Every structure is written in structure tokens, then in C-alpha cells.
Image (tube, rainbow over all chains, first blue to last red; front, side, top):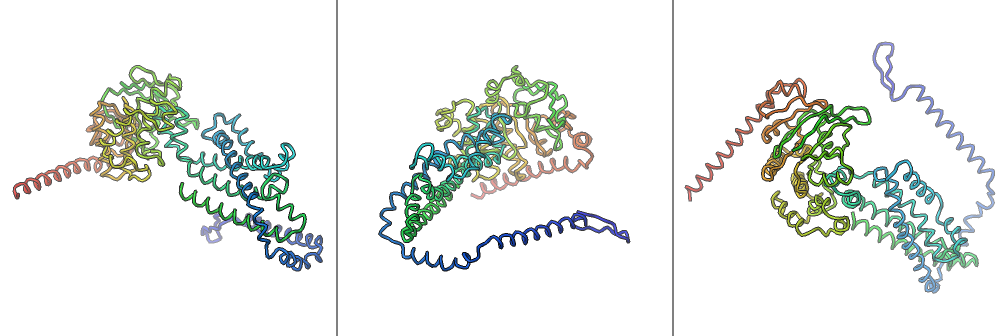
Length: 272
Length: 279
């Protein structure tokens, strides 16, 4: 904000000083220039023959995939059930580990800001920074292929997500209620159960179903690296170019995701 | 019963909230603590139950020095000090009954409280208190469904179920309309009288304080500048506490309102008499 006095002695107000205004203009100009330059580089590096060919290839692929081979669907019920189990068990497992981590990480509940809080934050960051597919790749190598590796992979990836959102909810609680419970002579654990837990329950329920919903989608691809679930069938069919069976799998996944969306919406509505 | 000696509180920011405050409150006395915002009223009552740690000085409740207690002994001492808050500070998502029973947390173990298995004696007392504050119909309602006045009544019941010797009351009426404010103040003062409880009530509304309490303490910038009966709050005293202002209106209003109430009561009596004659 800039207030200047002009020649007539009138005070003039402008949103920014002219130096700041020029700096902002220069920022936009260099941003645009960079964009144009990058566009050119990409242009040079693209094999345009492939791109022009893309509609035909896509059309060919669709014509092979449609109609889906519906009879194949009976072989998919078990894998999709496995997938749902991986997602659900993984989410539950993550909750058990994420809740304590969240309480240790939240500013207002951590026992030690200097020692324990950084450790809890490190757990959260490291869990979040690795994709569940990568976790699965590592775990398949360590504990062998199968659903167990997939479940653990989903759990490890979810800890950070759940703990981060939960500790933010804990930090936003109304301290008055905590103060009131403390003033009754309640112990620390009682303050936690009466003063804090009721306040974060809606957030906790929302985060849980949200993560479960994400995990169902993530667990459908874990099979690609051998960690169980419907991804295994997907990979097998992709390898033999059985596109009409791939489309059946995609259809089943779509149904599962729609159901999970519906369930999480219901749960969220019921609890809040 | 409650003695405060040379109580000093300096916040980490360097602000001196209380400057060597001394006061003594005998059993059964209700004291109003008045003063401008930032005078240290809230800090003072929070230093008594050590929700705020005093920097130096002593708080002595029935010969026990609260300021020296370790955290376990402090918990035990807090059970006998009920606290009532400005924004009610109820646990919003718990029911009225759970909120009242929360006042018993200091007396029951963790698992019993976690599973809501409170002793029958506590539950009897909760029913009795809810009846006394006029909320017997609301027991299963969630706290966030209640109106302001009703919430404050739950807050009062929660404080009283602790079986306190002392009530610490922080701006009980600041979020309430004038009529409800009076009802709440009257309820608090009646209950103190019934149970012979001492109370410190922080209050902004000078007129309201004058109506209900026996003793007023005026706090200004962390120092006591007035300590005496409510009738002693003359314009010069209020100027000393709050600063220059036309205080005549504030004081007069109290008298007028009293007269109005008396007049209203007289009308009510007359109506009853007439009805009696008519039938």
C-alpha cells in the first residue's frame, strides 16, 4: 500500500508502490517467456508421427476392448474381494499406528516438543513421501508376494496421511473445554478422553473413511508388482493384450469404487 | 478459608498480570472481582487452581498451600474447587448428563470414566443437581443443542457435583442476555448460600455485581484498588478502577431496575388478589 502526495498536496493512495508494481510485471513477463521456451523444447523432442497416429491407435484399442468379455467377470469376484480386504485391513492397521503418532505430533498434546514431536513428524513425512506402489515393491522383495505385503504397504502409506490430518484436527480443538475438564481434577488420560476425543471424533471418522476410499483405489494397482488383489489379473491380461478382459476388470474396479464412495458418504453423514 | 498472599504472575511475554495481590476470603462469602479487560481477573482465579502457574506468592486453601503441591496432589486439591466459565466450556459433543458427570472425574478411576460406569451415588447427585438448576428434561440432550442460559446451568451443575469448597467463576454472564444474566447470577448466589460456599466471581457488569454480592474487589493493572461493600462503589471509586467516565448513570440504573422489579411484583400480587376476589 502506497500513500504519496502529488504536486497539489493531495494525498493519493494506490494499492502498490510503483517499484513493487514493476517487479510484479517483470515476474509475469519472465514466467510467460519461460513457458514459451519450454513449449518449444517439448515441441522439438516430440515424435509427431506417433502423436498424429494416436487417434487411430486409440480407436483400435477401444474396438478390441469393446464389448468387454462378460463371462470373464466370474473369475474376478475373488480378486476384487481380496482388493477390498487389503484396503480395509490396511486402513485399520494404519489407524492403530496413526492415532498415537498424531497425539505425539500435535503441539498441544505432545509430551515433548523438542524430542518426541520431531520423531513423530519424521514418521509422518517418511510414510507420506513414499507411494504405496513403491512400498509394495519393497515389501514384496522383503516378505514375498501376496496379499500380506499389499496390506502392509497400504498401512504404511496411510499412517502418515491419517496422522497428519488427525494431528491438525487435534491442534484446532477448543482449549476451553480441555481447561474445564482439567479444572475438575481429572488425570491427563481423562482429560484426553473427555476433553479432546469428543472434539476430534467427527474429524477422525471423516479422515478414516476418506483414506479407506483412497486405499480401495490404490489397492487395485498393487497386484502390478505382485502384492495381491485384482491388479494381478490386470497385469496378466495386459501382458497378453487381452483388451476385452482388461475392460471387464476396469468395469469391476469402477463398481467397487462407486460402492466405496457411497459408503463413505453415508458414514460421514451419519457421524457428523 | 482462602488466602492469597503476595501473588505475582508474569507472563513469558513480560507482561505483569498480577502485582503482589493479597486477599482473604472467609467461608461462605461471595466476592465479585471487577475491573477493566486485562486487569488480571481471569489470571487471578486461574492462579488459584493453577490452570495458570503463578510466578511467585502463595495461595492457601484451608491451610493447604496450593502453590506448593505436586501434580498429583494438585489434582486432588482441584476436586474441591469448582469452576464456571464465560463460554460455558461444556464438552459440546457429549450429553448434558456426561457433562455433569465430568465433574466427578477426579473421584473415579480412568476405566470407570472411560466406560461411563459412574458410581450410583454420583448419578443420584447429578439427577438432584440437574433438577435443582431446572434441567431435568434435558438430561439426554447434547450440550450443543442447548441455549446459552441452559448451557451455563449445566456448567453450574458440573462445578457443584465436585462438592467444592470454593467456586471460581469466570465471567458467568458475559455471553448471556440481561434477563438470563440475572437468573444465572441469582442461581449461583443462591447455591453458594445453600451450601455455605465461598466464591470469586469475575464480572464485567458492575450493576449486576452490586445486586447480588456482599463484597466487591476492584482490580486495576494487577493491583487491588478497592475492597469493600457494593454500596461503596461511588463514581470516584469506579473512576479509580476503570478510568474517567460518567458513572452516575451506571449506579442510578441499579436503583431504577430494583424499583421496576418491585413495581412488577406489586402488580403481580394485585392481579392475584383481584382474581381471588373475582372467583
